[in-house]
Structures are given as structure tokens and as C-alpha cells.
View: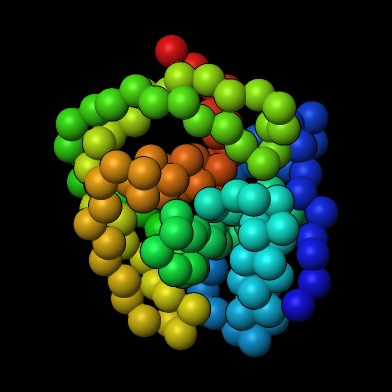
Length: 145
């Protein structure tokens, strides 16, 4: 595994829309492992591929319940709303209040190319929405309330 450089908000790549992944290959599995190692080293709870300069629809998450990767994640249902403070590894030293759905249903595939459906609330729901925003070129600072 290797630590990857995390790009910051000044880098235009963070404003690009990431491309869908057709299938998870050995190279992408290595990217996922490297992304997890990078996220842990930076004390993060989520990381999207664009944050390490890869414009593919891949995210990794670990809010303390174990790590997982989602490929081509999409939010299929949102319920409720809450406002909470967010930060971002690509926007170091900044934080702010962001309104997000309180509960979401997210679908995608895992690193073994198997379909995944996650019903999330609270911190996990917030983290998933934040990371999926990265795949669409959106940063939390665009959504400050």
C-alpha cells in the first residue's frame, strides 16, 4: 500500500465530474487500499477518488464501524434534514455548517463487483453524501449555510 497525495481546493480536478467505473480491476482494488491508508493517515472518515487525483466514481468510508468502498454510488432516497459541521481533507483548516439529508439510501457496487445497498442515517448518511458530492465536483464549502 502507498500513501497518496491529497489534492486541495485550488486544484481544478476537484471541480470535475468523475467517470463511472465499468468494473473493479486489480488496479482499482489497489487504489481502494491506498485510498483507505491515505484516509487513515490523514485522520479522515471518508475519501473520494478525485481527492487523490483520480476522476473515477470510487469512495471509501470508515466512520468507526469498519472500512468499505463503494463504486458508482448513487443516492436513491433522501429523508429529513439536519445541519451539522463538516470539514474536508481537501479543504484543510476550514469547517462550516452544511444542510444534508438525515437519512439516505445509497446503491453501488463493492470492490468485488457485487451490488450494494446501504440505508444510512446520522454521521454515515452525512459522510456518504459528502463523498458522493466529490464525485460530482462539489465541495462542502459550496453548501455552507
